[in-house]
Amino acid sequence: MPTYSRYDVAFVKGGGSWLIDDNGKKYLDFLSGLGVTILGHAHPEIANAIYDQAKELVHTSNLFHTKPQQALAAQLSGLSLGGSVFFSNSGAEANECAIKLARKYGNEKLGGAYEILSAERSFHGRTLAALAATGQPEKKEGFQPMPEGFRYFPFNDYKALENQVTDKTCAVLIEAVQGEGGVYVADQHFLDQLTQLCSGKKILLMIDEVQTGMGRTGKFFAYEHFGISPDVITVAKGLANGLPIGATITTPELADVLGPGKHASTFGGGPVPCSAALKVIELLSENNLVNKNNETGDLLKNKLSGLAEQTGLIKEIRGLGLMLACELTEPISADITKKCLEKGLIINHVKDNAIRFLPPFVITPEEIDIAIDILKSSILESFK
Ligand SMILES: *Cc1c(COP(=O)(O)O)cnc(C)c1O
Image 1: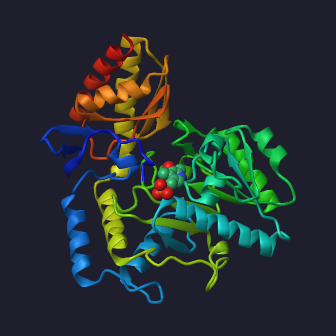
Image 2: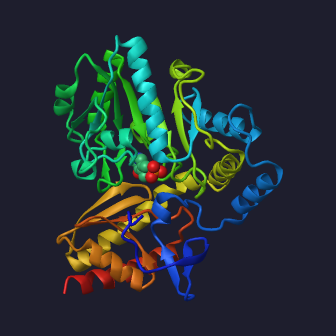
Image 3: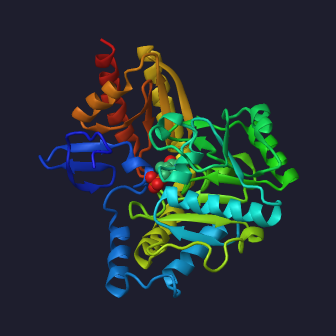
């Protein structure tokens, strides 16, 4: 279905931070799919992990245990909230699970509370409940009626959030850094107040780490930057470096909220994506990549600041770690993105006036220089 307006480029091969199209042209990938191939394309060790597992066992259904799924659940739980994990196949599904968990929790523990609060400009996925939670009315156009029980507040506006809380509120679902909304970082004070509100009223704090998780922002999960303790987090994009997988992770207190028969996924947590994800986690830690993303992100940020000074056409640089965006003085980001692509650089126009960078964690300083050169000439040409 024509649900994407695609560029006229077809890729056939990749390696590290580079892609090659069907004409043999090379592109530097500063987008990683959409924040997915965090360790670069066609990583040989991940390819081997996939192949080795595929030779042994690909699918059993979730009526049985498999070693890769158990090992990955233990790793993810250990790296975050310490409770249980539900595996699905995407970010939207990971959020669907979180939404169902919150409803079940409200049903059992909060006298039937079912409302979930989320932020304006947020993005939580395109399935109906995830879309209902998404704070972007234009994406819901034509799909009404939306599932009930969702209320919205302006991101980082605590007073407005408080005004949306009722005795029916069971959870708040929020990104610590809004991704699709344009790369906006949450305020520390806002998150502190939100945490206090949630723990006081026993409302679940659910952080959507689908884009920010797996080290993207310079911590394994973005919530760690803020010293807060969510009740539920969702992960997907970078988790298996490109194989489809989603995970919903709870605290020990919430580990059994979704009991037998209450949620399911035929493919979720299959041995192959779980083996890939285990290899991703191993490689991240072996190479200290999560920490390194702070340095690499600072380097990219500095170069973008330089570009802002040289051109006068960049208003603001936002983000954390290797999740960055530039806001331009004019709404010409689509044109800049197209020019960059022609010159062999993949970026993303996340808003009319903002371009987003989600490079793989293996990006080198030399590759950052190449990207900045292409970006500079593209920005200058687009402003002519
Ligand atoms: C991409 C994204 C999703 C949706 O993930 P899909 O795998 O496309 O369903 C949800 N939340 C956030 C924060 C995302 O960036």
